[in-house]
Image 1: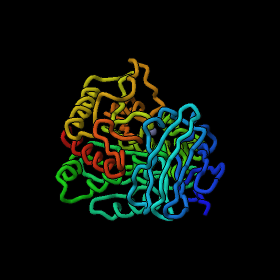
Image 2 (image 1 turned 60 degrees about the vertical axis):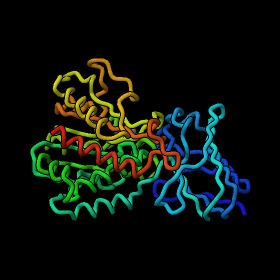
Image 3 (image 1 turned 90 degrees about the vertical axis):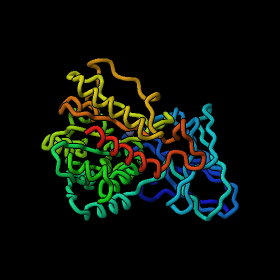
Image 4 (image 1 turned 180 degrees about the vertical axis):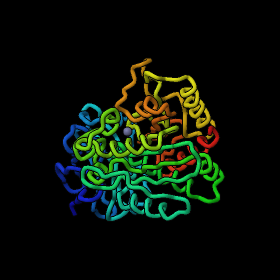
Length: 371
Ligand code: ZN
């Protein structure tokens, strides 16, 4: 039997170029109104025992070609447990090839374990019911989806946690699920302490349109939301505008913007060292958080990361730098790998939803220690 491939579902993205028996040549659709592409998510209907060969082509032109060497494709048979497949990348042709002997009639394949909008709504619904939690809709996306915000805590330190400006970075919402589970656990001492010291504002998905559409990096209009923070508009970036307006009302003392990085095999932070108004105590707090987090979890490190901005050269269209400049906040971009933590690899799962959630626990414990 010839296999069949389908991606007509929430966050699905693949183009079938050709199928020959149990082999397929595929490519990735670009984000709408943009040239970015890297996220894929599709299902393969086959027979148990089929020797599947799936070749994703054209990747030399993808958003992050450095993301493919050393990367292994994620797959699941039950859409719950995700594991890695044997994957080879040929940089000369820009082709990622997966070889797999089918163990079930349907194999689900994705760039990273997906976080569906259904699961997002389940998360919001379950957390909104918890004691001491307030639900707030900050606004709507271009296509009319809610920008959901969960608030809790009675302190006067305003902490903002937000994720999925880049919708293909689904590990960011797994991190959020871990954070919300910890923060709503009545027995958790760090959560109890944080809720006494802080008012927490948590936005698990800033880009629901891009998430549904299987985008890597942009919203419905093809706009990279993390380049809009100096001048968001209702036409291009209502998702940022409504959130920045809410931040202007509350103020921001600490902020964490959660992402995934395609190329670097490590968890790391990026900060705001290049902002014009940089204060040394602001930077000291950021560095103290980084040091404490590295002590709290072996999944975090400080050696690999982005090149720092020169003094005064920060790009203020990004949220981390904009919030540091605008509010004097201690703000940070947390990056998790699509590949794995090079220093603590897991050959079966690579970086995973489970590890993303545990990292959130470590981040919150660290935050509590510093406040
Ligand atoms: Zn990102």
